[in-house]
Length: 414
Image (cartoon, rainbow, N blue to C red; front, top):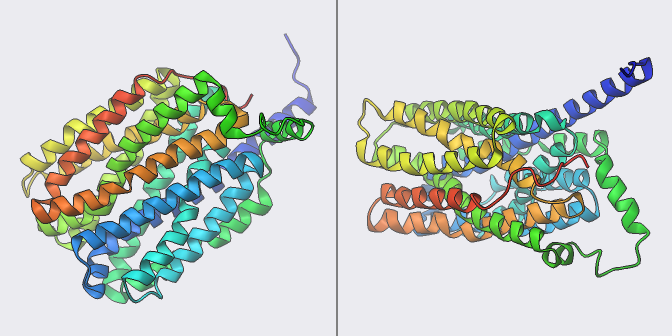
């Protein structure tokens, strides 16, 4: 049996301390990400009233955000392979934090749209937080840890809902956006405290000695390899469907509760906090199951479960049971989010992981940009509930697509 020396213990302790630090900072970054994404939905009614927006214009602002996120995420994924995960995450976090604060200074549709588009370029890169943490955490607990990491987004939802419940009635929507600029300080901490992952540094060192420029092109590497090409296409499709559902819901759920279910704002905030607290639990359970069973199985069951439960909310809700239905849906909603980070990161080799994850996920975002507009159109012609039935359909399609993605193709620490 190998002996444990003091130097070995020190190395192990240092490695554990390093991944814990990266996890904590990554978690805080995802809190900022989740808060920013949810904030537009929470302030939508007030912005509509002040700017005189139609449902379609309101949906267009959400769609423009998704397009900006897609462009920024695709570029950021490529940059993270070339320049570093840490550098891209830090600059992206600074961009969307400052941009969110500037939204409080806008006074019409065009100004808001321009600032939101620019800041959303940074939001699109936040998927790389999962890639960064995945390249630090222990292999045997990766799914659980990354599932816990994804609860940062739910925590961001909860934080901004609680803040909005206090700030919006007293100080207005602009103040909420001013406060959201604070995470720029977190961006500085990540930039100067977190080193690039060791495996990324090794890949870059090897690349510098290569004179084969075409072969060093990340998209060439992805599409010249049959397995990588197939995984990229499948994850793009799965992301199109899943993100159409997630962003469609996040943009219109507060309005649905207020306008169609006639829930007062204070009660609506309580319902949504409860929903995302349960989603928090769903993500951790999904991560735990992913380590012990199957990343793919957990993701598929979560997507299909959410798809089948949405019609229950639309057709069977009452004033008495809506809170319980929301809580049950919150758990199902959290399951695919809790495992997608591990599942997707392990589908690609280190040399192309940032480009492939950022590219496929954000191509999905780009295409999902139509979802808020489609729901806005259906809200005008029929109801927001009718739009949510379409959301259920796309969740189902994401789960079916993921059936064709194998488990654990690559270890993210090798």
